[in-house]
Each structure stands twice: as structure tokens, then as C-alpha cells.
Length: 494
Image 1 (tube, rainbow, N blue to C red):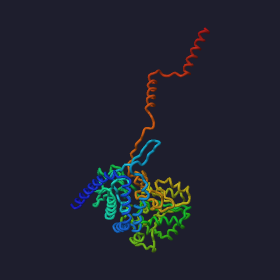
Image 2 (image 1 turned 90 degrees about the vertical axis):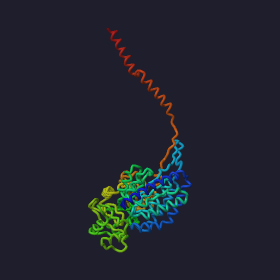
Image 3 (image 1 turned 180 degrees about the vertical axis):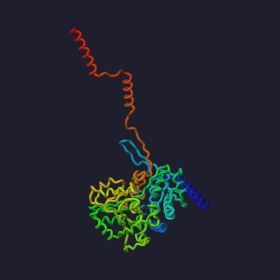
Image 4 (image 1 turned 120 degrees about the vertical axis):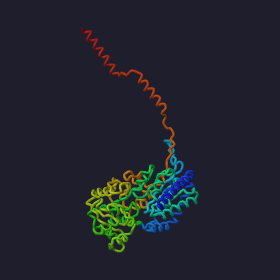
């Protein structure tokens, strides 16, 4: 009975939040650029002021990741994002093509539903709040139950900051009684116009089956190929910086390292030097069993944990200062657990003969749960980059840390915590999602070609042709004349 009451309350709360957001968004849709800019600036300011407390709250509640890295993520989701989206035109006339006489006008989508993952619970809420307001949309969040408090706090801070700067009340909402029924209700309710889903593959699939537009992110299973021309020290440094960032909770983080035989020993030595520990086959098996439940679903207790915590959990002794655990794998699939996505400080390690074998292995790994997302390559050979550009992903990250590169922190990609995987990954977009994905574009098109005369003359010609006898060519006429002359000559000869 208690659960039944909770579900009823949860669903009712969700309906109320959606209705309130719809009323607020109808008002926000009338705001001009100056008003929106003022609101966003205040949201960014409040996000920065609370970056540390939100990071602490997220780690305390979920146990995932590191406070210092979550502080950076909160900063990146606010200040860095703001600098990038500031010049974007999302209101009124956004394009005026004088030559073709087409004018484009931005219109908001409406009310968004934002699904928030437990791995990035505050930064994703900040990021989605800001891009929603930039495009004059309202948003209601469905938080992960294990990150409810910190996501609620982030959403509350963003809403209060927006309202204090002039936004309508309840423009940003968050479910306080999360349940599957509430999430389904929000997905399918009439007030919600679009879903932005960041989370597990099951949740993303549910978003796409809700019967309305959705922008979803599939899982990442990023292979990192260290090609023979790579700067090994730099490549390993980037991989270590990426995999240890927030203890591997970003979906763009590397999952497997691929090296060629000719440099295997050098790479392994460099990993050891920088804090990597190569597990024995027995240790690899022990860790693999601990990391996964129900096949290759990640054990929540191991997500975003340090190498020391993982090693301790299975009784492995590792050197002090170890940052990442590496396990050698001989293949991909069910018999090789580390070939799947691992949102923690564990990497699979593969050795191949050459780049062709690396190519084949990358495709197998991507098809094993990361197609469409990202691939990392370390090389000084531009031709090799282009060979790997053919792989089934939409982010080929070159000579950079994959986590930071994928979200746009160390590359020129759009700053984002929603990384589309395109149709290959079952997503509606292959982009890093920005406010430009959250607007409708209305077009005013003037006539630039007069078809009335052309149509009339064409019609007249067609009618005349259809009413007249079939046209006879000059050659046909000459043939008839020649035949008559020949016939007359024959008669005269008789």
C-alpha cells in the first residue's frame, strides 16, 4: 500500500511539474535576447558559486568519482559552456538570405524532459538547464534515484537563479519522488515536447519509444589505439589523465588500449611508470567478476571508484600510487568481460600485429557496445588518422585525452554533456548537443522565380500539340516526293 501511495504521489507530482513548466515556458517564449542573456548570466554565476558544494554532495550521495573533478565539470557545464553558446542566435531572425529571399526565425521547442545520470548528476543538470533557457524552453528533470539529492539541489539552484533574474516561476523543475511510473508519465505527457536523455541504454531506448522527438546518448566503449608513430609518453599521459578524471565516469573515457607488437614493451613500461598496474590473468578474472553483474551490466558499487578501492574489494595487492588497473584481453565479447564499457579506473589491454588488425579490433569493440560514440587514436601519421576516420563513430579524437576531448574541453568540439551517437548508435543526432538542437526554425520564403508565364505557355503548347496531327519531318516529306518521281519515271518508260 505504501508503494502504491508513493507511485500515485510521484505521478501526480510529475503532472504538476509539467503543467507548471508549460505555463512558465509560454511566458518565456516572449522574452527577447537581452532578457535571456541576463537570466543565463545569473545561472552561470550561481553554478560557479555552488560548484564545490554540489561536487561534494554528488560524491557523498553516489560514491562515484572525485570531488575536484566534479568541481571542474560543474565549472565546464556553466562558465565554459556559456562562453561557447553566448554568440549563438536562438531568438527572432537568425538568418536573412538576401539573395534567395529566405528569412529564418527561431522558435522554442516547448517543455523539455531532461533525464539525468548518476555519474554526472549536477553538471548535466546545470548544462541542460542553461541550454534550455538559452533556447527559451522550460525543462523538467527526471533524476537518477541514487543521485536524487544532488540533482534536486542543482535544479533548484538553477531555477531560483533564473527566476531571480526575471524568468517565470517553475521554468526548471525536478521530480522529488522518482519512480519508473513518474518517468514514463513525464516522457508521454502532452506538455513535454522533446526529451533529452542522458543515461543507460535502456532509458535512452525508452525515450525514443515515447512517441515524441528525443535526443539520446548511447553507451561509449572507446578504443584508444596507440599507433607506432605516436609519442608514447604523451599518449599514455593523455590516457591516464582521461581514465582517472572523475574515476572514469564520463562515457567518452577510454575503455580499451590497443598497441602494436613492435612497441608493446615500451607502452607497458610507460603505463607502469605513470601509475598503471598490469593485472595477472587470475587478478584480471577476479576484477572482471567484481565489475559486472547480470552478464556485462556494471556493478554500481564499482562505478567511478579508484584503482585502490577496486583492488581492495577483491584482495589484490597493488603498488602505492596505482591509478589505473589494466587487464590483457585476447578477444571481444562474452568471454572477455573487459571488452565492455567500464565507467571506472579499469582498462582492457590488447596487442595487435599492425594497423589493419587494430582497425578490425576497433570495429569489434565498438560493435560490442559503443558504435557511433567515439574513438581515440594517438599518431603522428595524418594518413592513419584518415584511415581510422572510416570507423563507425562520430568523434575521432586525435592525440588527446578522450574524456576531455569528447565533451569539448580539450578539443574544438561543442562543450556538451550529451554526446549524440547518430543513427549508428540509435540516436537522432551525431552532434554534441547545444541550444541549436532545441529550437524550431520557421522560414519566410519570397517568390524569386515567375512560374505563371512558363506554365501558361507550356500548357498552351502542350494543348496545341495534342490537338494537331502528328508532325511530319522534312526527311519524311522528301521520301514521299522521291517515291512519286520514281513511279512517274517507270510509267513514262512503258
